Length: 290
Image (tube, rainbow, N blue to C red; front, side):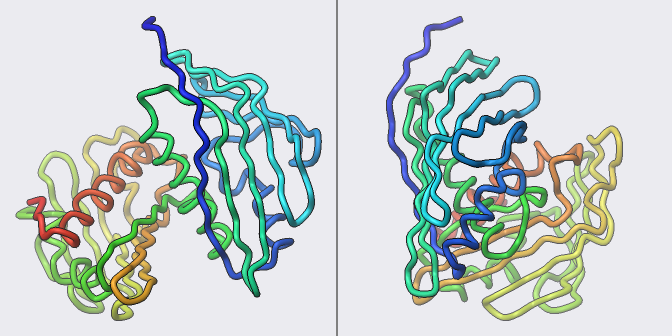
């Protein structure tokens, strides 16, 4: 196997939620609800030891080395392995610091350890997804890791993003394979990529420049082996927040969960590209994917 080059990094992310530090702290330490890996072992407390696992190819043992209720906690990785390339991040620390700000709580997460030299962008993507998407949605909305969600920011007003989501879906999702109407409540439309994807959506909620919900009323993903209709009765939720010329979009596919056969292909490799790439480039630069 090719020799790997390691790099020491410290990467921090900060978020803020309208909850008390004690409320936030108790939720954060319940890792099973939001941390992307499966957790095994003891509950989070000073000196506790636990494992984090993704299937059989990615595993770490960890120990809590700092724990102060409502203020901070941290763990250190004591053993680790990634079978695909033998990456070992033993000695890396994950640190959470909580600070009250009025009626809100400010959370600072820091990854303090090593990465493979070529994986700097991957670290940022994974940390941002874990904290800005999974943790924030759990703290703010009670959404667990089981429903796929992602967050993206636009340097554009909410009106521009909402217009793309309702009036110009054909420009970033579907193209010539989209039929029907997407603009108003109770509209229905179909995305049909022959031989690969069929889904029929109905607009079931629409709050101008704030919230849009599509219900998948019928679907067939022909490449699935177990249940080709996994998308049926799931919901696609778009939530917009922000002010002036900066808008945050939180996208959730309710029902797209890790136990589904299509999760790996439809989550970050699917919606991640459609939202972060196709939609983003259309809103920001007018680039049409289709």
